[in-house]
Length: 378
Image (cartoon, rainbow, N blue to C red; front, side, top):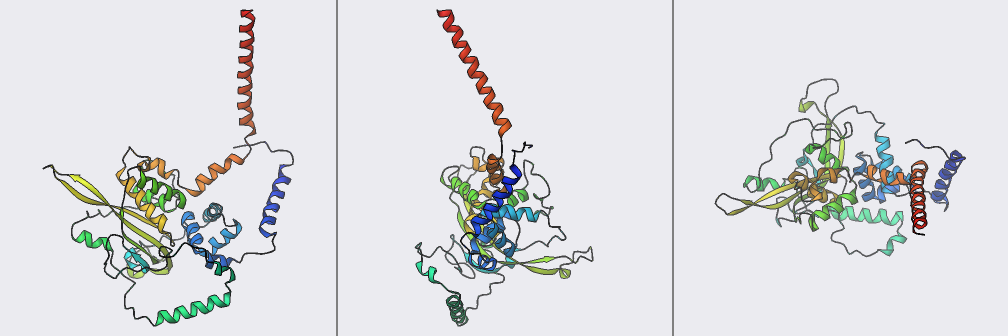
């Protein structure tokens, strides 16, 4: 859009930027990025997921610059991401190779390898801990040391590197259908505009980088009324996945010639949806559909909501908006939605004045018409 600048606009914009910095610094305290990175783990994970850029240090800097606003931090991260060269594509990641930190199932009490509660708010009282206001670095270091010593004394022989997937046992029993192996190259929504109908790889990409609150809201809507779905979490796991890239000096794709470049923490969810199937003989049979969700960091609510919407978009019931891929995918992006809402603050002088002129002309014509009618009546 092209707008005519208001007189003095450049100076006003510069002063607005200075005022923004003043508001951040006026109390004389400066946030330390390492403290943000270590003390705001959930916010860092959310920003990385929605910006589709895995860098905890950079996310902490973006959060600091955005003064804690997730959508602004995501905007900054997306903008920076667009400047980065894409030098390599990683090898396909197998989630079975995850080094698990947390693994639960709401469908089965006893699962191979056991339920691993890990770190979660699910089992805590939602009460403000006022003691945190007196917390010090020294006390925190002492607690961590004591905790590590206590953990070292536990006799836990569970191998957390290759825990089996819960749904594989249901597949082995023939209780859920086997998914067809799709070896086609995935689409990249960051390089090509989204076209409808979408491929599943496009849908999963949009969902995993979608705004956390938007996914939660639409997932809740699908549960409550738009389809009234009630899935069961077959397995939720959180942990670190190793990332490998191929040898840049050769075109061969030998698995033994891959290079380990690091790991990323993810949350992965597989949910089960009971579905009634009508048989030829009139009897009903229950089959389980599957929804899948995965995102950076520990963000369980988002991953579960993603799995619900994944199933909705796969089944595509036209009766419900939560099953409409255009409705869902075009309204969950953090940068797109925030930008479109925020653009309303920009000058709309010309367009609004044209609307005012139209209203004034109509009012004037209506008044003239009324005067003419009154004159004829007299």
